[in-house]
Structures are given as C-alpha cells and as structure tokens.
Length: 213
Image 1 (spheres, helix red, strand yellow):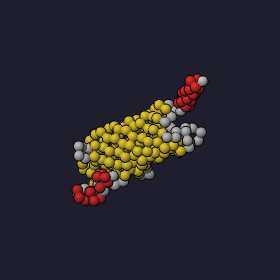
Image 2 (spheres, rainbow, N blue to C red):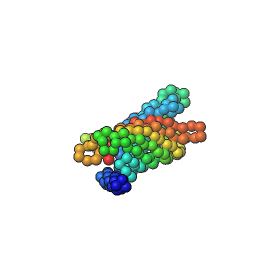
Image 3 (cartoon, rainbow, N blue to C red):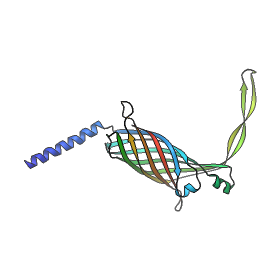
Image 4 (tube, rainbow, N blue to C red):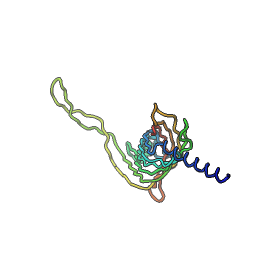
C-alpha cells in the first residue's frame, strides 16, 4: 500500500512539473534602461550615467532560465579629473555581451524576485573631447539660396578602447502583467566588474527598469 502511494505521489509530482513547464513560456525577452553608478575606483573619476539593454533566452523550468544579454553604459568623466588632466570634456562607455543564468523565486505570483548573474565580453571606450564649431550648409526656401551656418560640435581629442573579460551579479523584481499578455514590468540592480588589467578593473552598478516577456 505504501509503495503504491509512493508511486502515485511520484507520478502526480512529475505530471504536475510537466504541466507547469508546458504552461510556462519556453522563451524570454527583455528590454530596459536606467541609470548607472560607478563605484570603487571608477566612482572617483566618473559621474553617474545611464544604461540600456536587450536580452533573449530560454526557460528550462518556470524557476530557471538562461539569458544572452547586450548592454550599454555611458558615464561622463568628472570635472575634477578633467581639470587635473587639462581636458575640456570626456566620457566612458562600456558595451557588454554576457550569458546569464536567472533563478526566479515566485514566477507565477504578482510579484516575483529573481537572482541573475553571469560573465562575458566587455568593451571599454574612453574619449577626451573639446567643444568646437563646424560649418554646415543651410537653405532658405523663400529666397531659394544656400548659405553657410556655424553650429556647435564636439571634437574628439583622444579615443581609446579595449576588450576584456567581465562578470556581473544582482537581483530584481517583476510586477504583474501588462494587459492580457505575458509581458511584465521589472526593475533590477546588478554589480558589474570589467577586468581592465591584472591590477585595474571597472566597477559599476546599473539600475534598470523595463519590460520582460
């Protein structure tokens, strides 16, 4: 009798898991944007900036998935650093392509917490710039003449980029559904570290808001 009950319970459990997986979407997509805070050494030379990203992946189970994500972060070089280096302006951008497992704690609830993190390729690019003026051609349709127009522009004085390994990790929350579809709002914060060299690394915390399907 006990053996029969155990077999029955196991069968019910397996069928329930299979039904749950059938009901859950096999594919997932996300798009978001937000603000990025440089931390540790990067926080001494960079201002807070912004980020944007896209991701797509597969769900192996309602609670587990794997995402391939592309992200872009841009931050300005702060005035103290610019003054010390005698440059009028400057910025840093970081591109990344990472593979990230995701663990969801309450995938079918109105609010779901999840953990996400992984590793991949990061590209650092920094530019020092100066304001300048360039001339473009304008047109007056009434008089039918073309004429030169001076407009403000930005001159790139130096441009440096490097590709290196990096990793990330953090957590987020998804909220409800949008309309009658499977789209949900999400907000998350992650720590990213790009290894610039054996002794230098770029650390930042992007906070992102977006839509996840």
